[in-house]
Image 1 (cartoon, rainbow, N blue to C red):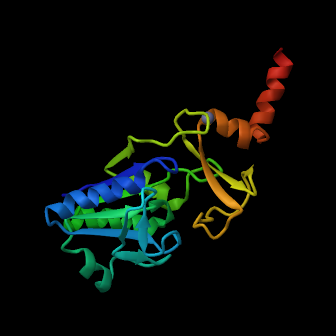
Image 2: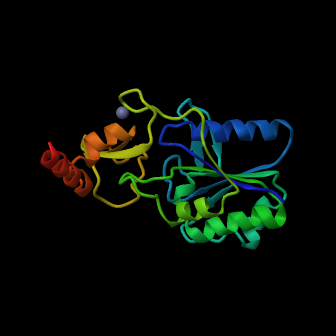
Length: 213
Ligand SMILES: [Zn+2]
């Protein structure tokens, strides 16, 4: 049976380019590709936009609690050679289980692309926890994103009005309409320095360091 694969990177890590390239490779051979993304991703609406200007309309724009196991959706993907899911961190636990079932019961490979952590440095949500639990393969996308210092980025820091923050709702999409919010991929050292230096853990450790000196 087919596999469910989870490919992750920090933001700007080449996920969209990877989806568009994979789509091209399949469609070049006349294989049907079905692209799914959540309606919560308001960037580009029903289109996947890459930073190099290429784009592709999605086949299923999935509502927040919509099932993939409906007549309407099944008719879209049952003849697909592959299902690609963009920004999979926006799907919920049930939707991930459905994707896994589609791969293993009706034999369509499912490749999911997304973030593993949110701006607080925690697992993005129950969908991502579920995909770590169920994916047959979990892999980091090779062309990973770079931190502002040039090292490999691991975290997705949120800036509000040009200040790093670890407070606020889990999901605020940077779709160009909320100019005050932006995301910056950071390495662990920069994430600690700019976002987490005031955290309980950092304060506690700093105290220990002072005490032992
Ligand atoms: Zn850095």
